[in-house]
Amino acid sequence: MHEGTHYWHWLLVAEMFLGGLAGACFFTGALADFFSKGKLRRVAKIGSYLVLPSVILTLVFLLLDLPPSRMFYFWHFMIFKPLSSMNQGVWILTLFTMTAGVLVPAIFLAEDKGILPFLKGQEGLRKALSVIGIIFGVGTMGYSGVVLADKAVPLWSASIFLPATWVAVSIVSGIAAIRLVLALSSKKDELAETVLSKALMMALIVAAIVIVVFLFASGDHASVLISGSYALAFWLGVVLIGIVAPIVIDFAAKNMATISSILAILGVFLYKWVILYGGQVH
Amino acid sequence: MAKAILYDASKCTACRACYVACKQWNVLAAAEVKELGTYYNALTLDGTTWNLIDFIEKDDPDRFRWHFISHRCMHCGDPSCANVCAAGAITKDSETGFVLIDNDKCLGCKNCHYACPFWEGVPRFRDEISEAEEEWMDHGNKVPGKRVASTMYKCRGCVDRVKNGLEPACVTTCPPDALQFGDKGEMLSIANARVALLKERGETKAQVYDPKGVGGTGVIYVLLDDPEVYGLPADPKVSTADMVTKWLTGLITAGILTIVPFWMVFKAAEAEGKGGE
Image 1 (cartoon, each protein chain N blue to C red):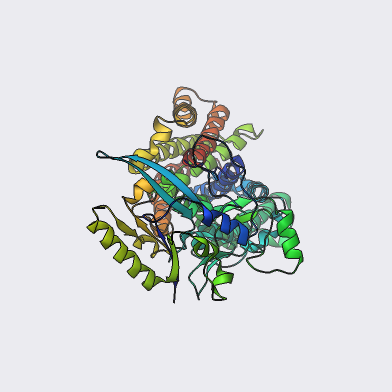
Image 2 (spheres, rainbow over the protein chains, first blue to last red; image 1 turned 135 degrees about the vertical axis):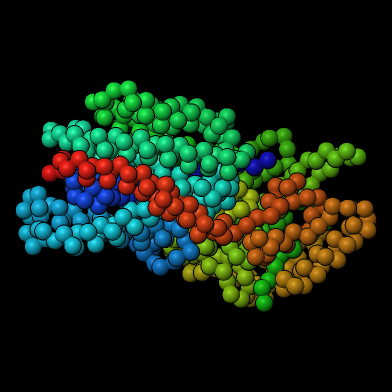
């Protein structure tokens, strides 16, 4: 007999959740702005303002996840090693933060608060940076899924679809976070709320489909989620609270954006939690 | 030329001299033991246990068998641990083919542990350096490998010994010659000859374990049964082999499955002709 190890804990879940949230907030906001031809500019602003706090928290959790005596050597990660998904993630996150977390919000801030006036009205630059931000945003949502998927842990790696689910659920969290900020804001925006509630519902359906594909493709290795030790957390937390409840609430009632968004965000966190922990069950 | 350690399960007596020799040469503290009513001493590989002998009971239809196997780093030809290491702390020694961790570079993130397809992840974390190791390093000793607290550890193939013309400590000490060391081609020839002999003696499942999916291994096994019986994966793969495909599933999800509904929903907002700011 031998005993397995269980090194990765909730700090990594928090890191993966917040990184995905940051990527998805920008992705959602920027696409909303592009596709609506500027009608949803406020959504883009909120999305971009949420990036930096989320990234900072991601980095805090990333550091805390390293042993205390090693965390200040984090710059060892700043080498170029394209075969390592964790190394890819370091660079994706860096470039994402520079564009989507700093430059785009700075242009919006110049417009909103009058700081850095030379950036005001730089629409061409903002759009170009937003396209780059969208691309690195997808990378930010996906890389931590790939970090898990290129391991020898069957639940994470037996199918090719874990990163797909990572992106899909992250997008749910991004839409829900922007919607939550809008719902809690004193300045109401009915159009944005209506559009985001529809987007959230679609994203939840896409996430559900991708998760089903992932579970089927994982075969017996997914039994830890379907009927094993993480089944309760999966069915109750992820499926019922995180996916079914927000859809039902939004169908049944208006003005429930706050609760529906919180439940969707909770479901995303729980999904990443059950995957990380479920994979380490020996 | 790449070197290899050959472990012959048909010769091993599970005396665990290899385990002791490894600890002694590498200045590794003894593992805490638990009385389980079995022959186990070290229960699992860890930061101070770089090899151990596993005892496997198998109830075959015609007889009860007791199999032994040595858990240790397999020194893969294409090591997943080195591929995933974001700090570039794990490299393959060009002279011997041994996979080595540079503990000065290692950040203790455990990425390598989860990437390894063998023995539930060979590289293991160690939080503390023992007084014996501190003292040994204080004396200016640089081999066998610098010790840094809160980093990952595993077998180094006694690379320091090998480069000085010696065999790894476990091989030198093995009383029944169940462990041998040399050029990989030579070790494979010995292993194949041994398997042929074992088959002649009626060991129909005897086989050489040198899985191609990880580029072959620097530790070759002669097994008496299927790899799974010993807890070995039948066909291990380099964990990063399908990384691009896995990335693509994420990109397609964002690029097609999401953008199309986003376009439909957000485009409708344009038609509303109001809202925004």
